[in-house]
Length: 250
Image 1 (cartoon, rainbow, N blue to C red):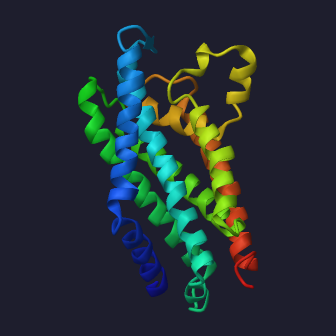
Image 2 (cartoon, rainbow, N blue to C red):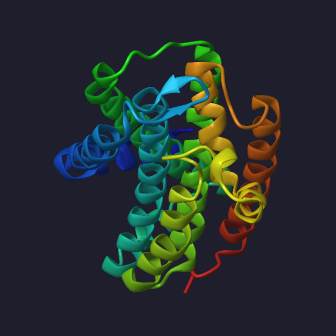
Image 3 (cartoon, one colour):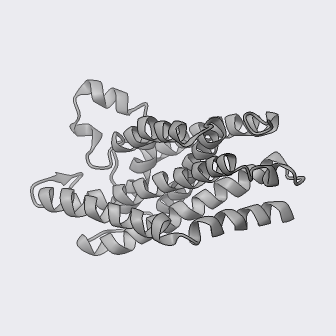
């Protein structure tokens, strides 16, 4: 496990050394969303019987967890490719599982750290209850793991920063914003509600939000099953890419 521990430590240290950019900046972005949307709609809108602020904050926390987990794994791999130091990761006798676990767990750490930071600076804007802390922790970890795995896949696939930016701008960001962060899908027209039901990001955020208010658009058990299936598919894809050295060994 020495190789796994070393790579994991390297990945955590990589984002922590520039915490102003990787941790503080996303927290400030989430704060701006809260001030703009929360102040504009709080007092005018209630969702599932709670104030809009109390509805919005868990969504912003989870959105930050997801986006930063993806950014950590994907940016690390593409930087290693562009700078040419990927060879120093490929040469040691690391198993595919060690590489996968190190990158994804480091992504989980960054996602959770940023999520906690967002929660700390936004929680005092509304009265939040903690109906089920277990669901909160479970969906935070699984959501970060899903996006960390997606980041790993995107980082392996991309050969330059433009490709990675396109993946993030046309896949990750739209899926995140169309997942019910700022609204309940119950308020959508039937067509868009059906489309949202196929968005895995929706189940991560909806299940996470259930842990706070005890209210959700779908059952948390359904959300959990959907997230686990999606994670299993992504893990299979990522492991195949690592096993074959796809776009890594050349």
